Length: 338
Image 1: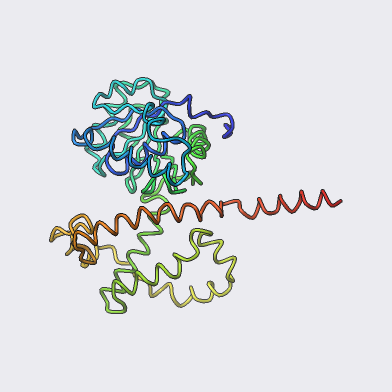
Image 2: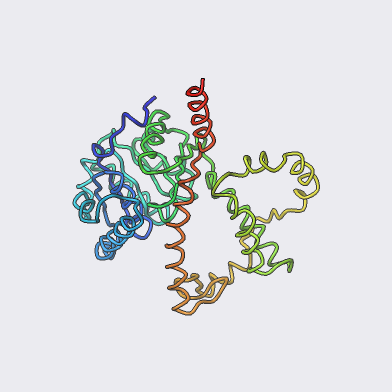
C-alpha cells in the first residue's frame, strides 16, 4: 500500500473543473499543499472572479499562518483557463460543478477526451451516488467521489468515496495524498447516497424541522441546542467516542423509548419548501430561516470566515490521534526514567 511519505504533491499536477466558491477554496488548498493546479472554468464569469477569490484565500491563510508564503508564491503554480485540453498533463482531476447529472455527464466527457487512462477523476458531489456517476465514465475504475467541506482550505474534513467499480488501490492513494492537504480523511469503501456526513446531518435536519413545524421549539431554540450541545464537543470527538466518554448504557436505555418517536418523514419539510418557493436563499438575498439586512448578511459572512480560522487552530491542538501521541510521549518519558 502507498504511504504518505512516498507521495510528493509538487510532482502531481491536479485539475479542478468548476471554480466557483468551493472550487476556489479547493484550489487554494491544493496550492498550499504544493501542487501545480490547472483550473478550468466551465462558466465564463468564474474566469473573472476566481483568481481574486483564490488570492484573498491565500492572503488570509498567510495572515493566519496556514501557509508560509505570500499569495504570489502559490499563484505562479495556478493556471486558470476555459480550455479542457490543458488537463492533458494532470494526474488527478476534481470536478466541482453543479449537482446536476446532465451537466456532470458532459464535464466527464470533456475531461476524458483529453486526459490519459491513468488519470484519476473525482467528483465533489455531496449526494449523487458515485456508482451512478461512474456509469458516465469511460474508465469507471479510476472514478471516485471527493466530498469536501467549505471552506476547503481550512477544514479537516474530506470523504473519499468508492463506487461499485472503483479501484481500491487508487482509493488508498487518494487517502494518503489527502493527508498532504491537511485533512483527516474518511474512506467510504461502500457507496451509499449521501455518504457518511450528509446522512448524519440530514437526519439531524429532518428532526429539526419536525420540532419546529410541530411547535416544540423555534428555529432559534433548535439552533441554540445544536451550538451548545453537539457543537461543544464535536471538534474533539465523533458520536461513538462521545458515547464511550459519557457512558454507553445510558444511550442504550434512552434509545429504547426515544427511537420510535423520531421523525421518519420522506417528504421535503414545508418550512424549507415555502422559503425556496418564495425565492429565499439565506444570507445571499436576506431571506431564509432568519431575515437579514445587507449589513447583517455581510457580517455573518465575515464572522463565519473568522470562525473557520479560529476553530481550525483549536482543532489542530486535538488531532484524531491526540491520545496516541500522548501515550507515545509517556512511553518515551518512562523509557528515559528507566
